[in-house]
Image (cartoon, rainbow, N blue to C red; front, side):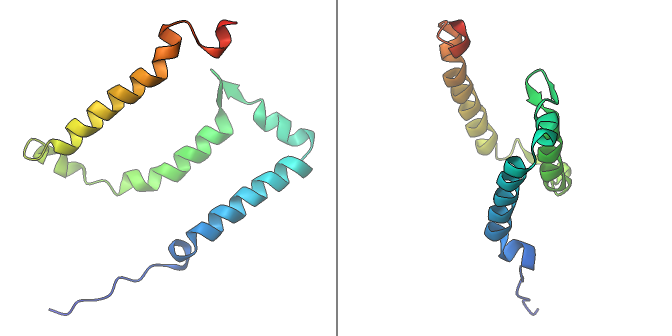
Length: 109
C-alpha cells in the first residue's frame, strides 16, 4: 500500500492571510461605507446582529456537514470527551452568569 501525501490547498495554506485581508476589508468598509453600513448594524433581533449571525452560520455549516453522525452511537464506549465538555460548559456558564445572579450586571445601573 502506497502512502500518498495529503496536500493542503491554497486556501488552507494561506488562511492567516485571508483572515487578515477579511479583517482589513471589514475595517475599510466600516470606515468608508458611511451610513449604508449603519443600516446593517441596526439589523438586530434580540440584540443579535442578523448579518453577523448569517455569516457565522455560513462559516460553521461546512464543518457541520463533515461530522460523522453515525459515530455518535459509540459515545458510551469513550465518554471522556463528552464529560469534559459538559463540565467545562457548566463552569463557563456559571462564570458568565454569576455577575447577573448577584445583580452586578453592567445594565443594573
